[in-house]
Image (cartoon, rainbow, N blue to C red; front, side, top):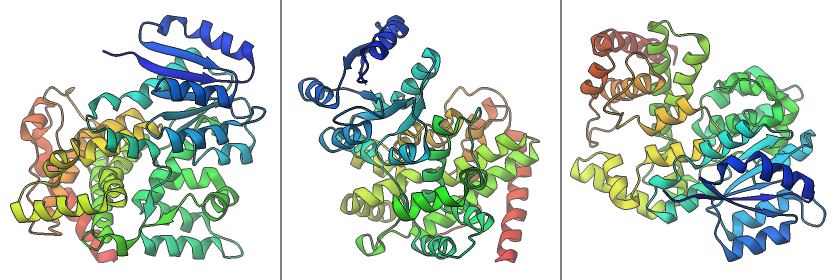
Length: 406
């Protein structure tokens, strides 16, 4: 296996020396280089491609944000991390669009190694360099236009309601992913990962939400005109219902609230790769969807033919880069093709796989698409196949309740 190439950038030589000593044991897995300025880092990148860059925020001449913006433009496939001791709000928010993750000094060796390992987990599965480059370049994901307008209207009120903001974010794939990327960064110093968009909005507060959306343009509207063959409304409904079904299954199985939150957000974001492909490969993805309907083959099989990766892998790669919890990322990665030898018992992946299949069974949004049957062998190996009918009935009830509320 090839070594990962990691570039560390800090204007203080003693910090680089400390990193070199701290990470000495990683020499067998990483090929590390060190630079004391942004310009020196760009010279290294030009001379030898890197997998990851870890940069300080405040440096004379070219600061970390400027450097990472240059890296994103010139070397878009490089994973970009901020490692900084400066944690003022404005500085951290400026890094949101330019860095995949934000780490705080002092950072323990295990934490830094874990962050880099998570960010690089899915690099090796992408034989399509163009797709990998596009995913790494993504700053933000587009939102449903109607939800975006409702959110802007609420934020412009004299006293915006965090409850209303949280509910809007909680129902939108792009908004949820964007907010969770930020709130799970080390800038907030949280000891546990946050998987609930509503909780994330409450933690951030109105002023930070306003700054992110109005000043930094973290949220954007999906341009329907550029993709007439793609229904974001249908994707939104499928994703939200899958999230609700995964949550329902977790509740029935007596899971604790944090795990229930993980199941909901994994279900909500399980098709985030479709949003990414539609927003960045319009013509190619329109052809994928058209062929899927015409040939009655699954979308993810057609995606693999076109991009050498499906929306499941692509979405998992992006959210892994953004630092979302490993069980959430793995649930998204395997929701169509779960592992043949799973750990017995309940898992976030199991809930999302079952929820996605039940949503396709109970809600037929487009009869032209191929069915998505549940992998009963996977459920049998996990010793959970006897629960399928219980889940089916509970999800059908949940669907009836939701339709009644509408």
